Length: 375
Image 1 (cartoon, rainbow, N blue to C red):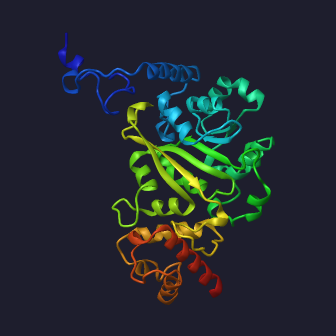
Image 2: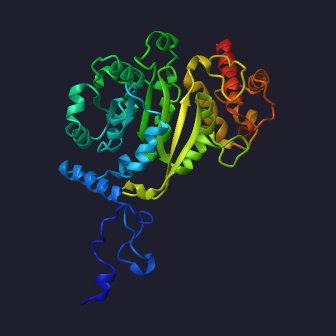
Image 3: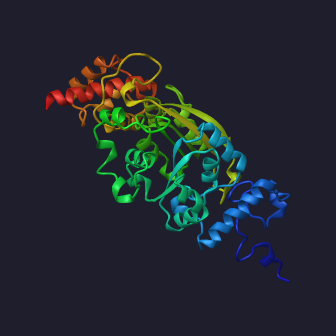
């Protein structure tokens, strides 16, 4: 027998959760030690997930960030973190094979599942035929980045038809003006507002969250699973911290974020290369965007992008004085930038890494106001 071929097989075995990392090679027994065994509930969930994928003739797509949650305990904790109650309206992004969907439905929620993958849409529709017929579940075949979540959530909550053309996003969501009449007149029954619960693909985390966090007029909470390192930046980093980034600012301006719990990588199939975490964003109503923990009113922003544009520009050089980063660009010359900093109550020598969400909010509004006066 050729020992070299047995030690280094031409087609190595398929990786599966329960191993210490996605790069584990099961044929290297001396290096990796005793093979770990999945808990019973995860083995059953893995078998069920694989069965659905086989029936759909579907392999997880790395390009779409498809890593399916297997741990029933984690799914229960996610549902609990979102405080899902009977008759809540929940928007689930990327239901996959429906593992999380099951827990949301069992909690009594009415679920709108938005799925991009053709094969997985069919999996969810077949698996939950009864719930779809009863109206407890609706499946929208679409890319969430091209969906107006406000329109979709309201249409589903009020019993209207939810179809891709009707809820397709018109233009750039970040450029749209805020619609205060929307929040005041279009109240979601019966609990007031909807929630988003999702296992987000790592590569879409920022794009998706930046579309959801400003929707406090129609959403109460956004509870998501995302990469652990990113989760800490979104929810825990404060001014002056090494991990303090633009997303830390934006999260605290639009919401009250909290790190719920850690999720090991081997709870997914296939196992990613990094660990995950669950984060809850309790959204602020747009009419009360004040940022930070103070009670000072911030001049109202007309466009969501006004803040994100400022934050992104500032954090290109987080240790550089903000006035030097901004002047001479789209924010105006040195006099305009200095005047806006003073109007916002900020030190003219302040650096992005030391400014909190409230400060960035005041500065964005001040810059927007001065740009309007100049035009």
